Amino acid sequence: MAFSDLIPWARDRNRVSERRGNDDNPLISLQRDLNSVFEDFWGRFDNPFAGSLTAGGPHTDVSETDAAMLVSVDLPGLDDKDIEVNVTDDMLTIRGERAEKTDKDGFSAQSRRSFHRMIPVPPGVDPEKAEAEFKRGVLTVTLPKTEEAKARVKRIDVKSA
Image 1 (cartoon, rainbow, N blue to C red):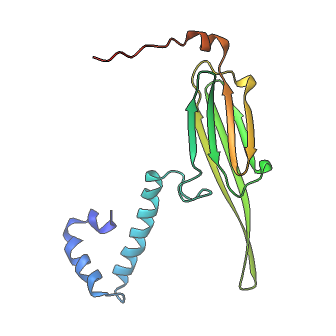
Image 2: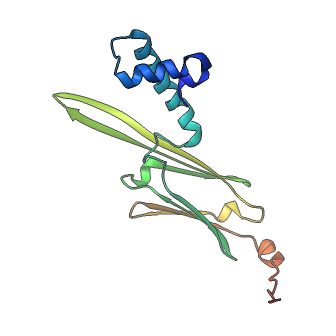
Image 3: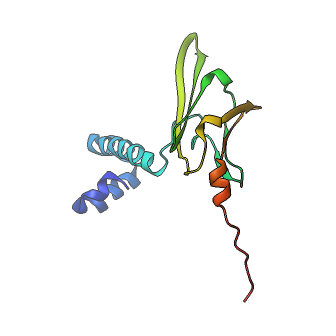
C-alpha cells in the first residue's frame, strides 16, 4: 500500500505526477521515501523473519513420529558454535548469529546477521533427553516422547464407506 493511498484526494494527482517522472518536485520525492519506509515496515509483518540469514529466514521443518518430535533447520554458512538451542516443557528456542566481514573499495565493515525461532513443544515430550546435531549446514533437534505419551497413542483404523 502506498502512502498516497491513505490520502483519497491526492491519489490520482500523485499517480499522474509519478508517471510523468516529475523528480524535481520535493513533495513527490518525500512521498516516495515515505512509501518506501511504510512498505519496509509493513512488509516485516508479512515476513517476520526478513533480514535473517536468508531472505525468508532459515527453512524449518517440524515433524512428529511415534517416538519423537523432530525439528530440522537449514543453516548454511554457520558453525555449531554460532547456534544456541534451548528447550523448556513447552517451547524449543533456536538462535543463531553470524558475523560477516566485507571489504569494499578499501573500507572494511562488519555486520551481524541473526535469526530466532520459537517452536511450541507438545505435551508428552521429554526435554531432559533432547539432542541436537549439526551436520552439513543442517541442525536437527530430536525431542523424544515420554513412555506415558507413547502409551497414550491409540491408532484408529480408517474404513472406506
